[in-house]
Amino acid sequence: MFYQVLAQLDNMVHFPRAQAHCDVPCGIYDPITAQIAALTVVRMVDLIKDIEGKEPLSKSDYHNSLSRYITVKEEHAEKAKHEIRVIWGDYFKAQHLEKFPQTNELVHKIMELGSKARQTTDRKIAEQFVEAINEFAQIFWETKGIQTKRAKAPYAPALELVYPIL
Amino acid sequence: MLKIWRINGNSMSPEIQEGDFVVIYHIPFLKRFNLGDRIIFRHPIYGVLIKTIKQIDWENKLFWVAGESPHSLNSQKIGPIEAKQIFGKVIWHIHPN
Image 1 (cartoon, rainbow over the protein chains, first blue to last red):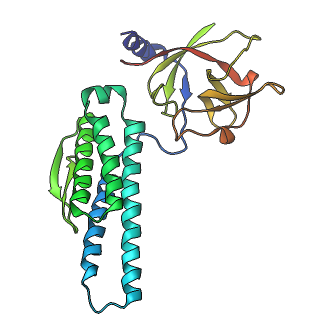
Image 2 (image 1 turned 180 degrees about the vertical axis):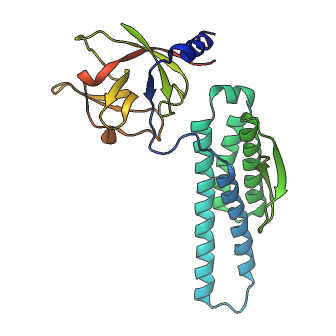
Image 3 (image 1 turned 90 degrees about the horizontal axis):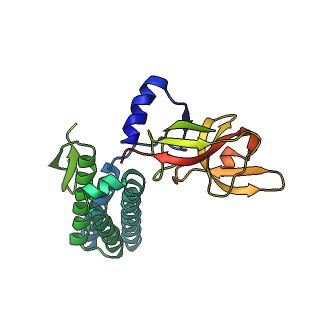
C-alpha cells in the first residue's frame, strides 16, 4: 500500500532517479534460445545415429563427423541449461514463483535432463529435455500474460515448440 | 536527513528492482559507510547510481561498489568512489508486494 502511495506521489513530485545499470540490456529474456538449443540436441542425437551405418565413410571422416556432432550436442545442452538458469535467476521474482510454484522443481528437472542428454545418445532423454523447456517457456510467457501456442518447428527434428502468440 | 529515490534498471536485482523506491539517510559531513551498505552516489560517467559497497580502502577512504545482479557493471568499471560523491545509504526499500 505504501508503494502505491509513493507511486502516486511520484507522479506529482517526481522523485529523483538512481540508475541500477547493467552491462547488458536488462529485461530482454526469451526462452526460445533454450528451446532451439534443446532441439539441436535432438538433431545431433539423430545425426549420431544416422552416421552409424553410413557407408562408404572413411574412418577419419566417420570420426571427424561423429566428434563434431558430439561437440555440438555438448555445447547446446549446456547452452540450454545456461539460458534457463539466467531466466530463472534474473527474471523470475518471488511473485512469479508464488504463482507458479512448480517452477523450481521444473528448472531442476531441466538441469538433470540437460546433463543426461550430454551423457547419452538416448533420444527419449533429449525429447524430454525439449519438452521440459517447453513447459518452462509456457510458464515464462504466462508470467507476462502472453498466450502461447504449440507448433512443430519448421526444421528437423520438427518437434513441437511452445511459441508466444504476439 | 531522509530522501526518497526511485530505481531505474535491474542491476540490484533480485533485492531491489526496477520501479522500487528507496529511502536514503544522509547527514552532511558525517559520512560513515560499511561493507554491504547500499549507497546512492554520483558517478562521473554513469550518472547517479545505486550499488552495494563491496570493498573499502580505509587508508585512502575509497569505496569499491557493484550491483547484485551478475549483469551489473563491475567494481573495476565503476572505479573507486569517494565519500563526497555519496548522497547517502539506503535505510528503507519499498517494493510493490
